[in-house]
Amino acid sequence: MALRVLEDLDFAGKRVLLRADFNVPLKDGRVTDDTRIRRTLPTIRTLLDGGARVIVLSHLGRPKGRDPSLSLRPVAAVLAAQLGRKVAFCEDCIGPEAEAAVAVLPRGGVLLLENLRFHAGEEANDPAFVAALAKLGEVFVNDAFSAAHRAHASTEGLARRLPAAAGRLMQEELRQLARALDQPERPLVAIVGGAKVSTKLDLLGNLVGKVNTLIIGGGMANTFLFAEGHDVGRSLCEKDLAETARRILAKARAAETHILLPIDTVVASELKEGVEAEFASVAELPAEKMILDIGPQTLAAIEAALRKARTLVWNGPLGAFETPPFDNATHEVALLVSRLTKSGYLVSVAGGGDTVAALAAAKVDGDLTYVSTAGGAFLEWLEGKELPGVQALEQR
Image (cartoon, rainbow, N blue to C red; front, side, top):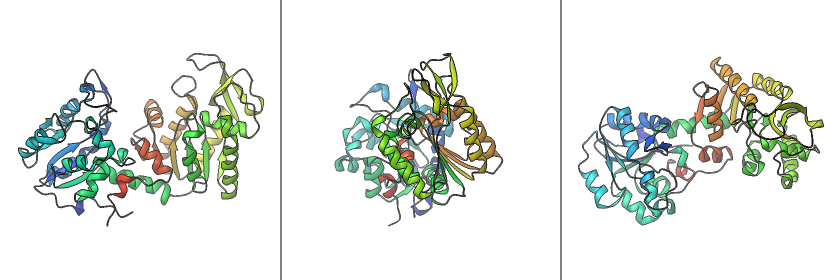
């Protein structure tokens, strides 16, 4: 993919509209996790060092109209502290107030505009809203890969209207994803977990044939076990997708992709912290219990596959990791991936909200080659889908 980047833009002295993803968690009007803000700093500093006037655009949450609890004002203070310079804030993102704030922004100044989604035109990619945003800037930089799977005004519309390029974070996300899936060192292993097969059918379909080994865990593995004829007791299972699971298994065999499913499990009578749990073979699952994690034999098989791998793509936990002791397998795999990555042997790319949370809980999120905070965009990229916000930045 030939992407336009910052070096392709003339932004010295110009008003740069920067689409960031400052969709950060707030509590009592304070930012509780500034990861997404920090990840945009390299792009902002490059623009400032080049003499740009930086006007930052972002959404926050899913407001239905103007909602003071979802204002970006608290983000301005955090951004200012991290940049070590003043960040102006405007109560709107279009119109006379925004235009006035932009007009007085000096060279090397930073202005954060209010939540884009306070206006319905943002998600509708309304041409009039795109025009109102475009009026504020001369060039456009998109650094919000996490929003690139949506054809919104600030992700796709502006890129078609102004000279546009990808920011540093967008560049890095795409580089790491390409490194993991398009030109990987092999063997390439993928871990796909989570609750339901139905949410990851496209992902599984795209990975089969691309990866050498596909490890399936979490609740979705139960559907595959059921499809293979196992009684999964009271476990979460989408029985209506059994035939779909069998087709995926057949496709994997034809493509010579090895699928690794649980061979033993951790079961309990309910999903509750401190509940009595036991190991059970998939051939002898108690009818009155539910599968909540993988067992030691499966964990050993996964560890063996990872020790042979040179590249790993990870999306989704292996068990009900939010509730101890069913976090054990995910935690142990996270520690192993950390060690293999730090040794220089494994290229590891992970993403998705639950995966990021599990890595953070294991205190290894900083050890992997790359951890994406992009959520839906990360998943859609793994599914092989075109992302409108990325397509709009391709060289033309």
